[in-house]
Image (cartoon, rainbow, N blue to C red):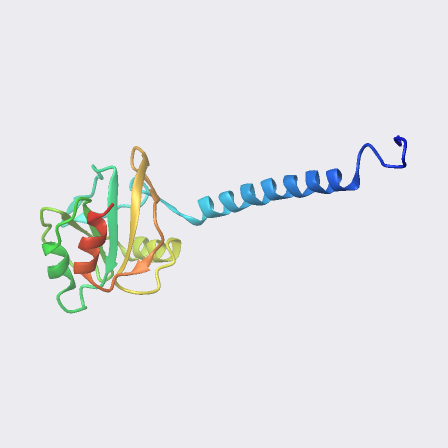
Length: 162
């Protein structure tokens, strides 16, 4: 169909604009799905962790997970003294029994669980930290990027702003 004067009713620019609009929407959708799948899940029914000799049962909707080594000087002591508005789950690489404090629950598990945890969350440094939030029952989803924990004092200041 051609109007008088030789211009098409359905111009090439309209076609290209529609194509690029659809491509941008598809790209945004794909990026959102990628970012969502980037974060991992942990089900405390499948992965058993212990507080001393008792099986850990999560009670809070959010946790700060700290993966640390009890062989690093004073890390467990510093964690136990940390006071934040979100409870901390401190998972020890060496699975040593630690005394829980008011805001910190020290967890340990078998070698298989520890290796699965390290692999699932791609933990390369110790201590590392990330947030999890409850999805349903005992299923929790990673709610932040994993990063190296350099300074517990800085962590306290950063968490207070959340």
